[in-house]
Image (cartoon, rainbow, N blue to C red; front, side):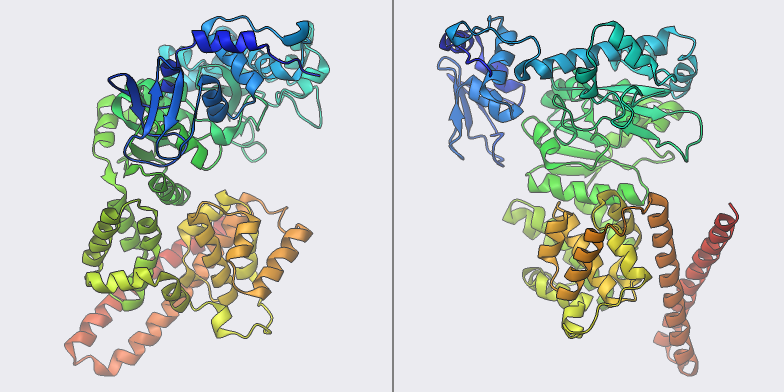
Length: 607
């Protein structure tokens, strides 16, 4: 049984701690007379209504009415219990923790296990760092990182390391330092199936720090061997001291720069983030082996008012960018997109062109609305009523995510100008967007009776396969649209998944609640219950997407040929001549794509 922290300790902590200093770790504060003000970390707001009174050691928000002392604030922000918050603040201000009734805590009780694991990870990070810089075994990893343009100073700042190829070494070493097997089994450093085998081996190691600069987890990059048998990156799972969805890589280094500049860069991964910092752009952070989360955005919302997104330019990166735009806009942040030229990522620009070029790319970031309109202009044919309608439907979620009527009105005007449509027509469709979506996408619930069985073919199975994997759906959504599905049930399920994805919740429960066709719901439930797609790999999903795209191109080519044949006897009319030219050019582009994909299928079959 845990002991109760004494009232004497609580009083001493509150008397010693500076609440302004505590809150400033999470919120940008400005002094106004006897009080400090900032935007509330507990609810969305643009105008500061969150106050901190230093001499009374209390905070209060006039918007959501949250309030309390420094201990309660830390409990809310760190999502920890009262004893943990007291101990954290006691360490911060040098107060000894005492317990009621002369209770003596056990050496390894639940209360301090978090600190014990942080200590373990710090020691292991030191060993990996030594292995990279000081051992012969780690020399190849050091040469790799050096060739990527990473300086010795940056290596030491981020404490990069190398994990030994011998997967038994770490357990033996830690045992020799008197760590128990039970303690190590819960550390996340070893395989659950083979407890003596290290989770990370023969990899370039990236320690992950919490906001106070303590090592709480690791990421490891594959460098040599068979890439098909090992993932490029391995990342720690959730641990007692670490929640990946609530942590940002390099936030401990970036916090001050974010506070001063009032902006933050969300980038793809460890190397991109490190490249930004080495180039002097020190307000860059990265999600940790997962899609960006609302909790990660909340971490920076108290300091920044502008987010710059720097994700890869491939299909998955574009999908991640679009999702992040909506998430950030829903939290009241301005969003810009960094577009990299002549390189695939910031690390490559740093290596080949230098810090000045990367800085220029950041300074030339474009507004998210311009990015989305440009992307949709390439995705849809805006010379047809159908293309314009689908273009608008894909832009409406962005307008939904905006926080003020002025922003919404301005974006509707921008959409109207882009499509050459009146503002009144755009507003009508926006206000009736759910009905417009149903009509435009021709959901099977409307065109088929509920008693008609769902057609389960390759198209439908491909969409089912990405139901619970957000990363795979990002790839599918970036490559396909509703028009690429011939099966109306597959088209309807894809549309439902996209709606949930853009809303930030692609869970099984969310998909079922948004699906309006009982037959599709039944097929979803059956497939998940049977685990039909648990064996699907990323490659098999990618192959399915490739085949769907290929089939869609062939259908479009067939439709173009039929339209061209129907125009053969009517070419004396100028409009028909212009249409024939457009159709011929489109067919030429499609032929090139089909031929390219045919070559790809041919090379893949024999490998």
